[in-house]
Image 1 (cartoon, one colour):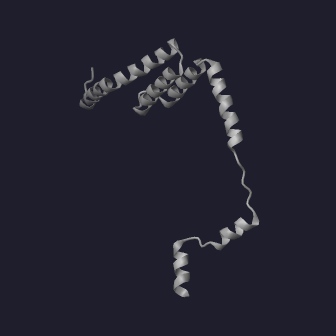
Image 2 (cartoon, rainbow, N blue to C red; image 1 turned 45 degrees about the horizontal axis):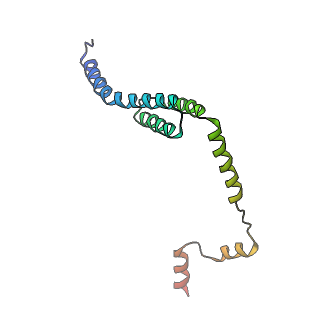
Image 3 (cartoon, rainbow, N blue to C red; image 1 turned 45 degrees about the vertical axis):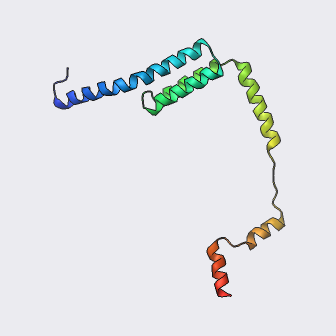
Length: 126
């Protein structure tokens, strides 16, 4: 039991904070347990959300949150994740287009004024 006044105040504050933090921590634990029991993408999303919420409120350390998320991602069946990764890689290769600058495009860019003030200054001088 605290004796000093500031220690008593700290105890009151920590009890008050514990009442707010307990439901968030419990929700996180339940979401993780639910995902481990039935690993689906919906449950993974819910677990990630609960972990992020607890992290935002400083209930868990950011390294612990990252570790939990990493371990949960490994539990997801690999056939689902590998199929989605291969399709996104294939799409990204076909959608990339490279543009080459020609001499005409660079000349056009050089002839254009940089700002509106520059055009106003030229207009007033003429």
